[in-house]
Length: 223
Image 1 (cartoon, rainbow, N blue to C red):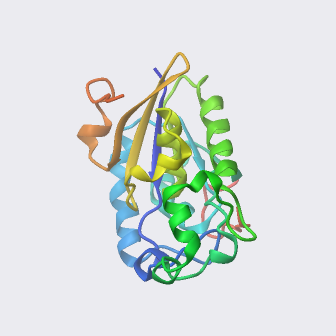
Image 2: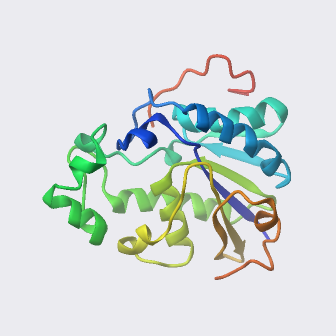
């Protein structure tokens, strides 16, 4: 049974500032985030990952770098479909100020009807998530996707057939891993929002249902 692990990047500078980072590639991990990335190495090692697909944004690359430094032979690929949602003119703004906008209520209650000004629609984001899920249905070995919070929430919603309007029900914290199992085209959420080795290594008993980047210093990159 194929297993897909979804890793949200570790804590970023935008996370602690309460900023909607979007596709800003200058956003990096915090000191705590780098520590989280290092601590994830033994957790990921136990998952026996065959392939890794990663968002092209710096904060995701930095999150998986400590693991790749130890496991440089692991197949690694950047997939543009895993990039953060394009929040358009909302990108770089404080979440506290965005919450006062009239459109904020739509984003929270009826996201399927919303397109960010000069940005992406939630329907478009879901389409790229579903295209990845469909491709992964044919995988035989464990796969790790390194991506962003809203993207992972949409993966989880799509996996269990929740509507786009309900994808915000999930909580996905920085540095957490969520797990989806695939069986003959059917998806189940094994675990979510965890970095516990015990939870991640028991998929059967736990079943409950962009920007350009030049990777300098990452020796395992672009193989």
